[in-house]
Image (cartoon, rainbow, N blue to C red; front, side, top):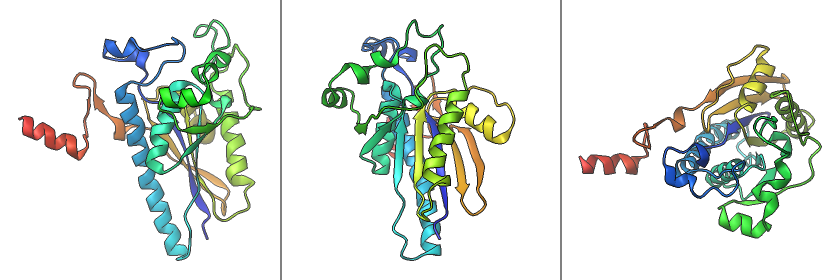
Length: 262
C-alpha cells in the first residue's frame, strides 16, 4: 500500500539585492521584496529536478507494491514574498504542478531591524493585479486564502512560527489523512525555516545557515507514525562558483559548450 511519502522544505534561490552582478539590483522595485536573479531562477529549476528524482524513486516503489498504483499528488506551498513565489514557480514547472498554494505562515521572519512596518500587506503580490503579477514576474497560477498561521509584526522568535506551520500542514496532509495515497508536499520559504524544523524533529539545535535553494527532506511513514530526517540543508544540486557565476556541476549542454570554447 502507498503509505510512505515525502515533505520538502526549500529555501528560495538567489535574491537580486544580494546579487553579484550590479545590473540585477537595478530592477528591484520594492527593497523589502526583491525578485530572483537569473541564477536564482536556474536554482529553482534545478531544485525541481532534484525533487523529481525522489518522486520517481517513490513511484517506482509504489508500482512494486501495487502494479495499479496511479501516482501521487504534489502540492507546492510558497511564502508570498516574490523570491519564494518565483522559486516555487520554477520548481513547480519541473514537477508538472500548475498552481501554487500561498501561505503567509511561512513568510520571512518579521524582525523590527529588517522591516520598519509589517511588509506583508505591501508585498508585490498584494500590490498588483493577479494576472499582471503572474505575467510580469513569471509566476504560476496560485491560490492565496486567508491564513490562520499569519505572523504578527514585529516578531522576536525566529523559529517558532515555522515549526507551527510544519505541524499544521503535516497534520492536514499526512497524519489526519486516512487515505493510503499520500501526497508529496514541497514548501518554499526562507532560510530560518530549515534549521527550525530539523532542530524541532531531531531535538537538537542546528546551525541556522541555509544556502540558496538548499532543502530538507523528511519521510513520513503512516505505519510507524514517525518522521525521518533524511537530509537537512542539502545544497549539492545548486553548488556554484561565485566568481564564474556558473554551477560547479553544470548541465550537459553547458559542459559541451565549455569544451568547445577551450
